[in-house]
Length: 110
Image (tube, rainbow, N blue to C red; front, side, top):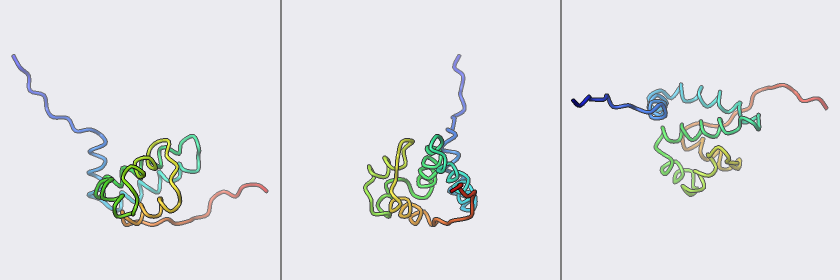
């Protein structure tokens, strides 16, 4: 007897679909994830979130082309060990229709 198994959809694919369908969710998702860039031990989360948003907004190849960087460079930059330049970060955000902003945070002691 053969059992039919319902097709499973990965969490990642569901996440990409939700971000694609709801631009406001994508903005809030990135805002929360970008806070992790301040923490060297959690920096990968912010980079992977930006990668997920890039996938939702056309895919990494299309975003790389629009940002004017190679696909390979984008994959490296947005990997868990990536270290994108400010130029790359700004170009990717622009390609997905977002921009970088600054808000007050805790001030470091002098």
